Length: 295
Image (spheres, helix red, strand yellow):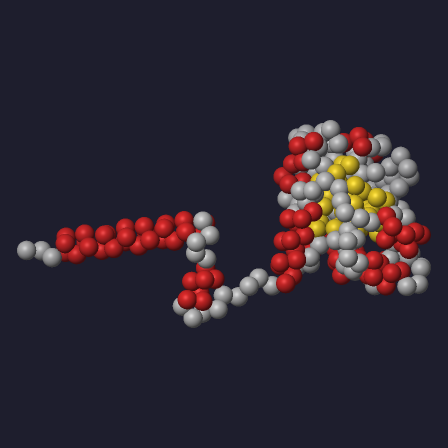
């Protein structure tokens, strides 16, 4: 008599039993009856808790992204009044990189000094750090990404240009940066990293898109805007992944259009761990993202 069929049936029975026990274990864990930590302790083995940074980051997302709040723009000349403006359900919006490229803090980046973007206010960084550490104060650093007259004026090779090679300018006569340039990416990532290190709760990326207004016909060839903007955003997100800071983006109303002028897509907006913001005119188009409207 061949013993292998009987042995095969026995092995299959053991496999089915193991699968059943695994399912029961997962069900009990889901119901809160058992936990991996408890099993580890029973076996005499410690299960390491998540790091403090991971815990803070998760808590920050859970507590802030899904809750609407009132946005209060705080001029940098009124930082001493932040305590009175702050409160439950309120977020203080501070312009850390303006559309003209000027910075609201003192950067250690050589390029920031070279293009004259740094704040000249002594002690500004220390003031911002102390503000960001205050209990009950939620701070948002607004960063104008690609709209930057200072850097584009300093080095036109980093700017979006006309076919002639001169920097393209929008209706406000401001130049825009080219997100495919490594120097632009390094600069913006450096700024956002410094702001994360200063302790901001959230970084809001505005103008994180190609221009959509002005004489767009005079803008030189830009290639695949969707792919290029996504590549830049992925690199920026990766650089900030280890910091307990929420990274958000201002959406453009044309994001759903194929080959949008802005280069933004629904997938790009959804990829940000923070919330989506919207200008007054784009709020309706971005309604599916439940955007926070910029004041």
